[in-house]
Length: 341
Image 1: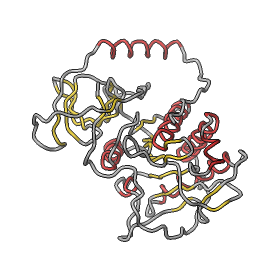
Image 2: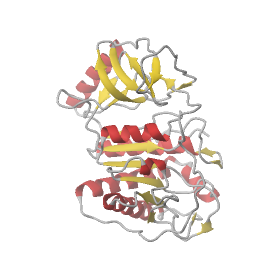
Image 3: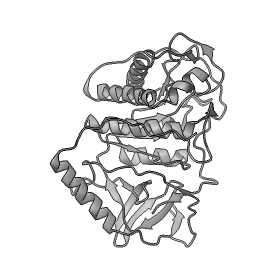
């Protein structure tokens, strides 16, 4: 099921902001996308053509924090709304890295920089994540991520998305975005599934980089605000007995989740607010108000992380969860880039 975008009231922008938006829209509309050739990132230019079997369905809107003369562009939003990583500015346009990790030149796009929060909607494309009770996780994650981005912008916190539509995005590319942008924090957004016991409160899990005290604090704040918000809803909650602000390790003692393991040095968490596999929770997730509540809680936690010394809650030693592949990213094999124009 494709979830409808949340219908939420927006503040009316000032006349100055409306004028800036009009100028930006006119400028982007006047440009056209040039021809481009693909090469594997870091290799010599070749003639391999990129595939575009999927199309980005919605655009990540640029904000007033877009690149300026004093800010080096870090990401580019293509005319189709896809986030790509900037390599360099060239006479023919921009040299960028595509979602599948290929290097290409495109003629136009909207460069952005000075990003405070990077939001990563988990899964995408053929890697759907959980698909139960009429909800596909990849679509749900993206919907909540877009609302979260909007909420953060309203709080004056500049945020960007790693994935802007339902296309595949390898874990390596997600991490490359974060490491290039170097935001103040990184949130990978998922929703849980699988066998779980009945609980009296939400079984929210927030995983953090186990050696990072900042990531641990971020996880505690996100867990605290999510549970405080979601438990006001009536539901037959389910979850693991050790749900909370926790970590998970692989056999070598490193962080189990690739997006956390590959983004060391930047406070990063992987969030599983609720369970798609629970019929009661799935019913709530189908409503725009509940999805908006998830996003609002995370946005509030981010604001607290950036502006207070609050420590959060939910910390304890986790149980062993095994080492099976959690899915939702993987390598670059069989990756088809979305249309970039």
